[in-house]
Each structure stands twice: as C-alpha cells, then as structure tokens.
Length: 463
Ligand SMILES: Cc1cc2nc3c(=O)[nH]c(=O)nc-3n(C[C@H](O)[C@H](O)[C@H](O)COP(=O)(O)OP(=O)(O)OC[C@H]3O[C@@H](n4cnc5c(N)ncnc54)[C@H](O)[C@@H]3O)c2cc1C
Image: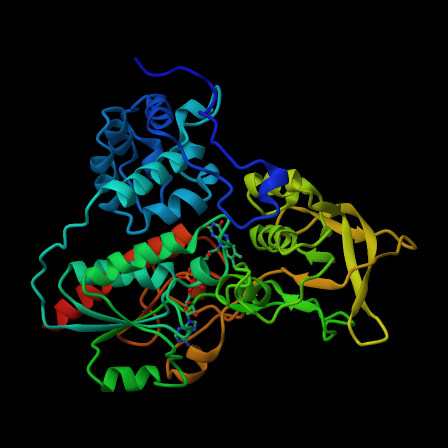
C-alpha cells in the first residue's frame, strides 16, 4: 500500500538564525526511514509522467521502488544510468517545474519529493557505495570539450563511456563551472561536486584547467592537434549591468564576481585571506536564484542588513520558491517593486547608498508579465556600503569571435541547428547556457547528452 500522506516528508534543516551565520549545508538530508516513507508515496503510474518531466529521463519510479526495498545502492545506479551528477541535481534542480510538477500526487497534495530522494540515494552511495571502474574499449577517436560545467562534463562522461579519448579544457583553475564558482557552499557543498568530477576522471576523462580556449589554443588549433570533434559548453559567464550612474564605484560587484570570490577563492573559509569587502549593509539587485544566493552569502559574511531590490512583485520573481522562502527565513529584506536609479558614492569613492524609485504594475508586456512602471516622485535611498548586481548573464564572446563559421544570435548565444546540437561550423557542437542563455543545470546536462550522441554519430559516419 502506498503512503497516502498528502504532504512530503519534511526535510531536516539547520535553524535559520544559526545557518545564516555559517556556510554549512542548509538542508541536512533524509534518514533511511524518512527516505523509505517518502518513496512509498509514489503511485507507480503506468505512463510515468514524472519521467517525461525530467530533461535527462531519469527512471524515477524504478529508483523510488528500490529505495522502498532498502536497495539504496541499486537506486543510485538506476539514476546514474541517465544522470551523471545525481548528488548535484538532487540539490539544485528545479524539480517543482519538472519531474515533481508532473507527479500525480501533486494534484491533491504535495508531489513526491523526488529531488530529496535523488539526493538521498546519491549521498548514500558516497558514504557506503563503491564505484567499479567500468571497462571500456578505447575506440581510438579524440574529442575536445571546452568548458567544465555541467554541459561539458556530461558530454565528456557520455563520450568516455563510448570509448572516446576526451580532454576537457577549462578556463578557471577548477572544473565544475557554476557548480563550483557560483552556487554557494550552503546549497551545494564543493566536496560533493569534486567527488562527481573525480568519478568522471576515473572513467578516463582528462581535465586540463587554466586553459582559456580562444586564447591559449583556438578551436582551429584543437582540430589541427588531432581532435576530430569539439564540444563547446562555455556557459553564460558575462555579467549584465544596468548602466546606471555609480556602477564603477568601489563596493559594486557583479553577482558572478562576488560569488566567485566567496566560492572559488574560498572567502567562506576564515583561514583564507581572500580580497573581498565584508560589507555591513548590502543591496542585491535582481530576483532570480543568483540574487538569492548573493544575498544569503552576504548575510553569512557578516552583513547586518541585506536588501533584495527587485522591480517586479514577488509572484514574478524567477527564483525558486524554496530559495525565496529560505532567504526570508534567514532575514533578507525584500524591497519589491523598487528599481535602482543610481548608486551613490561617499567622499572616498566607495558605495554610500543606492537611490531607488517605487514601481507599480502596468499593462502586460511581450512575456505576458505586467510591466513595472515608475511611480513619479517616489524616490528613496537605501544606505548601503555594497551593491551586488544580479540581473542576468550573457555568453562570453571569446569562442565565437575566434572561431570561423560559428554563428551566434543577437543575444550572443551560439546557434545550433536542432537538437543534434550541431553548430554552423562542421565538427563543432554546443549546448548549455552558451546556447540557451542562462538556464538550469539539468537543461545544460540534457544538451550535453544530446551533443555526445551526435558527436558519436558524426565521427562514426566518417569512419
Ligand atoms: C549563482 C547561480 C546560481 C544558480 N542556481 C541554480 C540552481 O539552483 N538550479 C539550477 O538548475 N541552475 C542554477 N543556476 C544555473 C546553472 O548553474 C547553469 O544553467 C549551468 O551551470 C549551465 O551549465 P553550463 O555547463 O552550460 O555552463 P557553466 O556552468 O557556466 O560552465 C561553463 C564553464 O566553461 C568555462 N569556460 C568559459 N569560457 C571558456 C573558454 N574560452 N575556454 C575554456 N573554458 C571556458 C567556464 O569557466 C565554466 O567553468 C545558477 C547559476 C548561478 C550563476
């Protein structure tokens, strides 16, 4: 008999007033009993709508069944059949708009906590399981992957499993992309990302860091050195700014820079002397996951007042509900329907405040969302010593500007022909944020998988 409780088994979490002062993980994970009880809520629908909602097609009912039977290692291996980064996806995937959105239990209550169970199985494996190195016969072909984010790592892992010799070239000194430099430790511990990367290396994937393709080697030079196909998964790491006065002041960061200093340059560890401001009063501009991450990180660095400044209403915030909820619990102040006009400097050229104007919702725009319009004369100033801009990122132009025949659209995203992920340059494939613009981990992984399949077809067709 399934467990007919309409509510998900609650996730144990650190108390908000404790966790907002440390970088330890917020959610603590299910125990075995909790996991079994939650997995028993699955009705095992014949048409498996949850699987259709997963961009990488994880066999969800199968892995849930294994959890109910206490076969946690089996559950993990079932997920691994289609998802190379389960511990990551269990933590950061927007399940509420994907697998869980399609769950039949969600009609009359809460959907099955698929993400929480994916995390449980992956964590169980990390503690108790063993990775048997699969024996793959090398097929003698070489592929280069540019960018070690979720798109690149997935493509690399799938190609290595088919016998390809794969080298990943990563610009930064650590692999992982946004998983390493963007998403904070308290949501996604870096040790977990590293373990997933190590598992790929065990499969034979070579990772070369500090290699900016387009500068150290061009795509043409990679072909000349014997790579038969190239996958571009360079993400969307170029931060957008508002172009308002004061953005050049000391104390203004892009969210990418702020989070990179904390995550990759380890400002979250007291023993590291990372060059970063430890601000008292912070305004984070934006309403997405990146803004929530920056605001919650600022609190943990010791800020007393952290404001989210967002020009629309809460219902229109693109951030996951869970992130908004966690940020509110931790004490982040939400200044909604407010738009920055200028950043004000103090006598030393540092940030002294941010001038904003109240907004109200007008007619719907092309996206169907009601357009925010300024309320005349409603200007006000928030006294802050740091402003973090989290209003979106675009793909970096380096690869497309140094590669002949690689077309991009007006947003700077690399153009692919269809879901083969083939670009306009023969032998070059692309996926992830570099193609879609800033999106999600699982979509980047799905694109990386599609590209691996196409690269395999392409190389075999030339044999
Ligand atoms: C702060 C933050 C929080 C987020 N939170 C979530 C979340 O909770 N859930 C979710 O699903 N998504 C989230 N996202 C989005 C998600 O992380 C991205 O959609 C995903 O990482 C895209 O994967 P990717 O592989 O395409 O690119 P990336 O992860 O950006 O990786 C690209 C890699 O390519 C490297 N690179 C770039 N140019 C070159 C070059 N010329 N040569 C060599 N290497 C290069 C970069 O250094 C980087 O390591 C978040 C994003 C941010 C910034």
